[in-house]
Image (cartoon, rainbow, N blue to C red):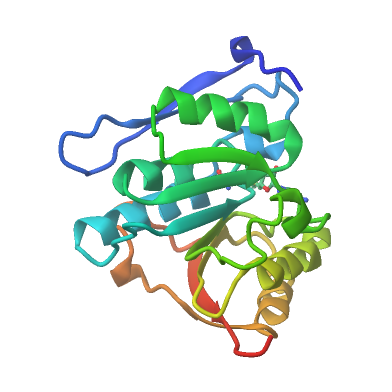
Length: 224
Ligand SMILES: C[S@@+](CC[C@H](N)C(=O)[O-])C[C@H]1O[C@@H](n2cnc3c(N)ncnc32)[C@H](O)[C@@H]1O
Protein backbone atom coordinates (compact mmCIF):
# COMPACT_ATOMS: atom_id res chain seq x y z
CA UNK A 1 0.00 0.00 0.00
CA UNK A 2 1.52 3.35 -1.04
CA UNK A 3 1.14 6.54 0.95
CA UNK A 4 0.43 9.78 -0.86
CA UNK A 5 0.80 12.70 1.56
CA UNK A 6 -0.92 15.08 -0.93
CA UNK A 7 -4.28 13.79 0.31
CA UNK A 8 -3.61 14.62 3.94
CA UNK A 9 -3.64 17.70 6.16
CA UNK A 10 -1.76 18.24 9.39
CA UNK A 11 -3.33 18.07 12.86
CA UNK A 12 -1.51 19.34 15.96
CA UNK A 13 -2.10 18.39 19.59
CA UNK A 14 -0.37 20.26 22.41
CA UNK A 15 1.24 18.09 25.05
CA UNK A 16 2.38 19.42 28.37
CA UNK A 17 5.78 17.79 28.73
CA UNK A 18 8.28 20.58 29.35
CA UNK A 19 10.01 21.87 26.18
CA UNK A 20 7.91 19.53 24.00
CA UNK A 21 6.63 20.74 20.64
CA UNK A 22 3.06 19.70 19.73
CA UNK A 23 2.35 16.21 18.47
CA UNK A 24 1.81 16.41 14.71
CA UNK A 25 -0.02 13.87 12.59
CA UNK A 26 -1.33 13.87 9.07
CA UNK A 27 -5.01 13.01 8.65
CA UNK A 28 -7.28 12.64 5.67
CA UNK A 29 -9.93 15.26 6.38
CA UNK A 30 -11.46 15.07 2.90
CA UNK A 31 -11.84 11.31 2.36
CA UNK A 32 -9.68 11.61 -0.76
CA UNK A 33 -7.16 9.05 0.47
CA UNK A 34 -9.90 6.41 0.85
CA UNK A 35 -8.10 4.72 3.71
CA UNK A 36 -11.09 4.19 6.00
CA UNK A 37 -12.19 5.58 9.34
CA UNK A 38 -8.70 5.33 10.82
CA UNK A 39 -7.26 8.04 8.61
CA UNK A 40 -8.86 10.84 10.64
CA UNK A 41 -8.33 11.85 14.27
CA UNK A 42 -11.32 10.88 16.45
CA UNK A 43 -12.45 12.81 19.51
CA UNK A 44 -12.16 9.80 21.82
CA UNK A 45 -8.49 9.59 20.80
CA UNK A 46 -7.97 13.21 21.82
CA UNK A 47 -9.65 12.62 25.19
CA UNK A 48 -7.52 9.52 25.79
CA UNK A 49 -4.28 11.23 24.71
CA UNK A 50 -4.95 14.16 27.03
CA UNK A 51 -5.97 11.85 29.90
CA UNK A 52 -2.59 10.10 29.59
CA UNK A 53 -0.88 13.50 29.39
CA UNK A 54 -2.72 14.61 32.54
CA UNK A 55 -1.72 11.40 34.34
CA UNK A 56 1.91 11.86 33.31
CA UNK A 57 1.88 15.50 34.43
CA UNK A 58 0.44 14.62 37.82
CA UNK A 59 3.09 11.91 38.32
CA UNK A 60 0.59 9.02 38.20
CA UNK A 61 2.01 7.49 35.03
CA UNK A 62 5.57 6.25 34.77
CA UNK A 63 6.08 3.78 31.93
CA UNK A 64 9.87 3.66 32.09
CA UNK A 65 10.99 0.38 30.53
CA UNK A 66 7.40 -0.66 29.80
CA UNK A 67 5.77 -1.75 26.55
CA UNK A 68 2.51 -0.24 25.32
CA UNK A 69 0.42 -1.75 22.53
CA UNK A 70 -2.21 0.37 20.78
CA UNK A 71 -4.97 -1.40 18.82
CA UNK A 72 -6.80 0.38 16.00
CA UNK A 73 -4.36 3.31 16.28
CA UNK A 74 -5.63 5.12 13.14
CA UNK A 75 -3.48 8.23 12.71
CA UNK A 76 -1.53 7.31 15.84
CA UNK A 77 -2.60 10.38 17.81
CA UNK A 78 -2.82 8.48 21.12
CA UNK A 79 0.22 6.23 20.86
CA UNK A 80 2.47 8.92 19.41
CA UNK A 81 1.43 11.37 22.16
CA UNK A 82 2.25 8.75 24.77
CA UNK A 83 5.61 7.94 23.14
CA UNK A 84 6.45 11.66 23.21
CA UNK A 85 5.31 12.00 26.84
CA UNK A 86 7.16 8.89 28.03
CA UNK A 87 10.32 8.57 25.92
CA UNK A 88 11.59 5.65 28.00
CA UNK A 89 8.73 3.33 27.10
CA UNK A 90 8.19 1.45 23.83
CA UNK A 91 4.92 2.05 22.00
CA UNK A 92 3.74 -0.35 19.28
CA UNK A 93 0.99 1.25 17.21
CA UNK A 94 -1.12 -1.24 15.29
CA UNK A 95 -3.99 -1.15 12.84
CA UNK A 96 -5.10 -2.88 9.67
CA UNK A 97 -2.37 -3.11 7.02
CA UNK A 98 -3.76 -0.23 4.94
CA UNK A 99 -3.23 2.21 7.83
CA UNK A 100 0.38 1.22 8.52
CA UNK A 101 1.96 3.56 5.89
CA UNK A 102 0.14 6.55 7.47
CA UNK A 103 1.09 5.40 10.98
CA UNK A 104 4.74 5.06 9.96
CA UNK A 105 4.70 8.48 8.35
CA UNK A 106 3.17 10.05 11.46
CA UNK A 107 5.68 8.35 13.77
CA UNK A 108 8.44 9.76 11.53
CA UNK A 109 6.96 13.28 11.68
CA UNK A 110 7.40 13.21 15.46
CA UNK A 111 10.86 11.66 15.43
CA UNK A 112 9.99 9.39 18.32
CA UNK A 113 12.40 6.49 18.20
CA UNK A 114 10.46 4.64 20.90
CA UNK A 115 7.39 4.14 18.66
CA UNK A 116 6.91 1.64 15.85
CA UNK A 117 3.95 0.79 13.62
CA UNK A 118 2.85 -2.71 12.64
CA UNK A 119 -0.19 -4.40 11.16
CA UNK A 120 -2.52 -6.18 13.55
CA UNK A 121 -6.00 -7.09 12.35
CA UNK A 122 -8.41 -8.17 15.12
CA UNK A 123 -10.05 -10.52 12.69
CA UNK A 124 -6.82 -12.56 12.43
CA UNK A 125 -4.69 -14.06 15.18
CA UNK A 126 -2.79 -11.23 16.90
CA UNK A 127 0.05 -13.45 18.04
CA UNK A 128 0.84 -14.67 14.55
CA UNK A 129 0.77 -11.16 13.11
CA UNK A 130 3.17 -9.80 15.71
CA UNK A 131 5.69 -12.57 15.05
CA UNK A 132 4.97 -14.38 18.29
CA UNK A 133 6.15 -11.30 20.22
CA UNK A 134 3.50 -11.70 22.90
CA UNK A 135 3.59 -15.44 23.36
CA UNK A 136 5.68 -14.98 26.54
CA UNK A 137 6.10 -11.27 27.28
CA UNK A 138 2.78 -9.45 27.59
CA UNK A 139 2.32 -5.71 26.98
CA UNK A 140 2.21 -3.64 30.16
CA UNK A 141 -0.52 -1.43 28.72
CA UNK A 142 -3.01 -1.85 25.86
CA UNK A 143 -4.84 1.21 24.50
CA UNK A 144 -7.98 1.22 22.33
CA UNK A 145 -9.67 4.48 21.40
CA UNK A 146 -12.95 4.46 19.51
CA UNK A 147 -12.64 0.81 18.52
CA UNK A 148 -16.22 -0.32 19.18
CA UNK A 149 -18.25 1.84 16.82
CA UNK A 150 -19.15 -1.17 14.65
CA UNK A 151 -20.87 -4.06 16.44
CA UNK A 152 -19.41 -6.72 14.14
CA UNK A 153 -15.97 -5.80 15.53
CA UNK A 154 -16.97 -6.32 19.19
CA UNK A 155 -16.16 -10.01 19.37
CA UNK A 156 -12.92 -9.83 17.33
CA UNK A 157 -11.73 -6.93 19.52
CA UNK A 158 -12.72 -8.62 22.80
CA UNK A 159 -10.99 -11.83 21.65
CA UNK A 160 -7.86 -9.91 20.64
CA UNK A 161 -7.75 -8.23 24.06
CA UNK A 162 -8.13 -11.58 25.80
CA UNK A 163 -5.41 -13.13 23.65
CA UNK A 164 -2.86 -10.33 24.04
CA UNK A 165 -3.36 -9.13 27.62
CA UNK A 166 -1.63 -10.81 30.52
CA UNK A 167 -2.74 -10.75 34.13
CA UNK A 168 -0.83 -7.52 34.77
CA UNK A 169 -1.69 -5.70 31.56
CA UNK A 170 -3.61 -2.44 32.12
CA UNK A 171 -6.16 -2.07 29.33
CA UNK A 172 -7.51 1.44 28.68
CA UNK A 173 -10.54 1.71 26.39
CA UNK A 174 -12.22 4.92 25.33
CA UNK A 175 -15.15 5.55 23.02
CA UNK A 176 -17.69 8.16 22.06
CA UNK A 177 -21.20 6.99 22.76
CA UNK A 178 -23.43 6.76 19.68
CA UNK A 179 -25.63 3.69 20.24
CA UNK A 180 -25.74 3.06 23.97
CA UNK A 181 -27.37 -0.38 23.75
CA UNK A 182 -24.79 -1.65 21.26
CA UNK A 183 -21.90 -0.30 23.31
CA UNK A 184 -23.33 -1.92 26.44
CA UNK A 185 -23.14 -5.25 24.60
CA UNK A 186 -19.41 -4.77 24.03
CA UNK A 187 -18.91 -3.86 27.69
CA UNK A 188 -20.81 -7.01 28.71
CA UNK A 189 -18.66 -9.12 26.39
CA UNK A 190 -15.45 -7.52 27.63
CA UNK A 191 -16.49 -8.03 31.25
CA UNK A 192 -16.54 -11.82 30.76
CA UNK A 193 -12.74 -11.86 30.81
CA UNK A 194 -11.84 -8.49 32.37
CA UNK A 195 -12.68 -6.60 35.52
CA UNK A 196 -12.83 -2.88 34.86
CA UNK A 197 -13.87 0.52 36.17
CA UNK A 198 -14.80 3.78 34.53
CA UNK A 199 -12.27 6.59 34.68
CA UNK A 200 -14.16 9.45 36.28
CA UNK A 201 -14.25 12.98 34.80
CA UNK A 202 -12.30 14.21 37.85
CA UNK A 203 -9.40 11.91 36.89
CA UNK A 204 -9.38 13.02 33.26
CA UNK A 205 -7.83 16.10 31.70
CA UNK A 206 -9.72 19.05 33.19
CA UNK A 207 -10.54 20.57 29.79
CA UNK A 208 -10.25 17.84 27.16
CA UNK A 209 -13.10 15.60 28.30
CA UNK A 210 -16.71 15.14 27.21
CA UNK A 211 -19.89 13.70 28.67
CA UNK A 212 -20.26 11.70 25.43
CA UNK A 213 -16.84 10.05 25.74
CA UNK A 214 -16.25 7.25 28.21
CA UNK A 215 -12.90 5.94 29.41
CA UNK A 216 -12.51 2.59 31.15
CA UNK A 217 -9.53 0.73 32.51
CA UNK A 218 -9.39 -2.95 33.25
CA UNK A 219 -7.26 -6.00 33.89
CA UNK A 220 -7.82 -9.58 32.94
CA UNK A 221 -9.58 -11.88 35.36
CA UNK A 222 -7.18 -14.53 36.63
CA UNK A 223 -7.44 -17.74 34.64
CA UNK A 224 -9.25 -16.19 31.62
C1 LIG B 1 -12.95 5.11 14.82
S1 LIG B 1 -11.33 4.76 14.31
C2 LIG B 1 -10.36 5.34 15.69
C3 LIG B 1 -8.93 5.65 15.32
C4 LIG B 1 -8.05 6.15 16.46
N1 LIG B 1 -7.93 5.16 17.50
C5 LIG B 1 -8.55 7.45 17.03
O1 LIG B 1 -9.11 7.46 18.14
O2 LIG B 1 -8.37 8.50 16.37
C6 LIG B 1 -11.29 2.98 14.50
C7 LIG B 1 -9.97 2.32 14.16
O3 LIG B 1 -10.11 0.89 14.27
C8 LIG B 1 -9.42 0.30 13.18
N2 LIG B 1 -9.95 -1.03 12.88
C9 LIG B 1 -11.16 -1.33 12.34
N3 LIG B 1 -11.27 -2.65 12.16
C10 LIG B 1 -10.10 -3.20 12.58
C11 LIG B 1 -9.58 -4.52 12.61
N4 LIG B 1 -10.30 -5.55 12.17
N5 LIG B 1 -8.34 -4.71 13.10
C12 LIG B 1 -7.61 -3.65 13.53
N6 LIG B 1 -8.03 -2.38 13.53
C13 LIG B 1 -9.26 -2.15 13.04
C14 LIG B 1 -9.68 1.28 12.04
O4 LIG B 1 -8.78 1.10 10.96
C15 LIG B 1 -9.51 2.60 12.75
O5 LIG B 1 -8.18 3.02 12.77
